[in-house]
Structures are given as C-alpha cells and as structure tokens.
Image (cartoon, rainbow, N blue to C red; front, top):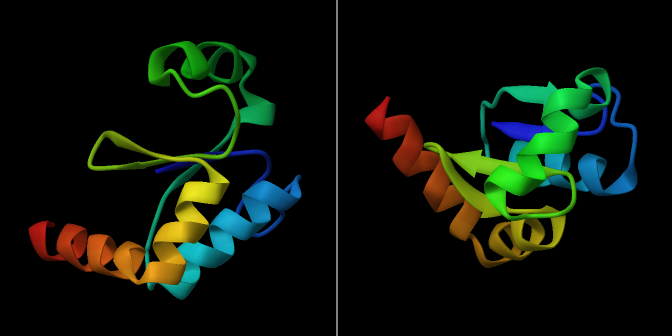
Length: 90
C-alpha cells in the first residue's frame, strides 16, 4: 500500500512519482491511497506510522519508509526481492 499525494497515474508531487516508478520497476502490483482526498488520513497517518512525510510505503502492514528509502531499496534490488516475497505469500 502506498499512501501518496495523487494517484499512480497522476502523482501530485515528485516524491510520490519517484516512489511509484520504483515500485513499478520492481514489478509490484500495489494499491494506493491519495492522501490529498482524505484529510483524516493525511493528518493521522504520520502520527500512527511515526513518519512525517508522504509518500509512505507499507508492505504486509509494516512501514517500509518514504521516497528515499524506497529508491534505495530499488537501487539495491531489495525492493524487487520484497515484492517477490509478498507475491509468493499471497
């Protein structure tokens, strides 16, 4: 699940756009939530996750991180491995 500004088809910030591209590059099939359309999620998710910014990537209910961490994982190949593991479990 990617909590982002905008949608994967129409990201509303560069960080969200880069996170989407990293996920697509890793072969992920993912759901997303546009936090700009839901003020309650936008206000409360950072408190819940203890992560102040968007996008926020969760895999199997666990916070992975924001744009920078997602890009680092993609560059190292770890994101693709995580995606494969998640797809096997489904």
